Structure formats: structure tokens, C-alpha cells
Length: 145
Image 1 (cartoon, rainbow, N blue to C red):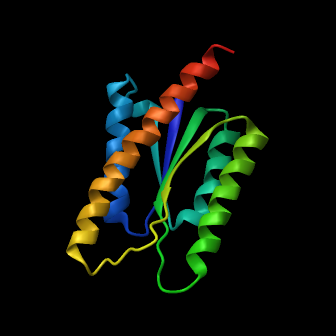
Image 2: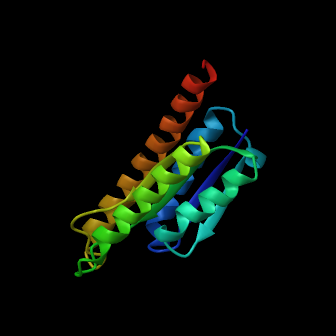
């Protein structure tokens, strides 16, 4: 029962907060290092494809996707966020393996403001734990089918 943790390198200092929190929550639930495989990709757009490749091996019961798509002052971020979520939905419906999204899309993110960065570091911890808990809950429910 392996779970893939696929995370994007963009804003890695923040994304790592979610990855670590997610991993900690899964370990508290009894998962061990050999069941939690980490994969780093360049950006969030690459996560759905790698999720599909992981699932196609038959080794994974779930994928948790982690990333940060920020508003960089151009309209681009909305298209990226929508493409990523559409990709997750397509892959999970096509394969029957769930993908839990912790790809965050903050509306107002300014990495030059220390308060903003501190807020999102804490927020990513919370969201990483929530993604792990959602994964655990879904796997428990799906076992009963």
C-alpha cells in the first residue's frame, strides 16, 4: 500500500512544509518510509502526468499532490491551477486511484513580505496534514466497498 507524494519545486521552501506535515501525519497513522515515496517535479503542471505514471505501475493506492501556484502579476496562474486540477480529476477517474490535492493557489502572495511568507509556511503545514487525513479517510471508506 504505497502512497506517492508528488511535489513541485516552485516555492520549494513553502511546499516542503506541506510535504513534511503530510508525511508526518501518514507516519502517525502507521505508514513507514518504504510506503511513502517522494517525487519532485519542476512545477505543478507536471504533477498529473507523474501521478498517472506512478498509478500505472500498480504499486500505489493513492497520490498526494503538493505545490504552490501563485499570482505572479499575470493571468497565467489561473490557467495553470485549472489545468492541474483538471489533470488530477482525469487521472483519478481514468485509473480509479485517488489524487489528493494540496496544490495551493493563494490569491494574494508577495514573497517579499515576511508576514506573508510566515503565514503561508504555517498554512502549508495545515494543508499538508489535511491532505494526509483526507487520503487516510478515503482509503478507509474505500476498503469497505
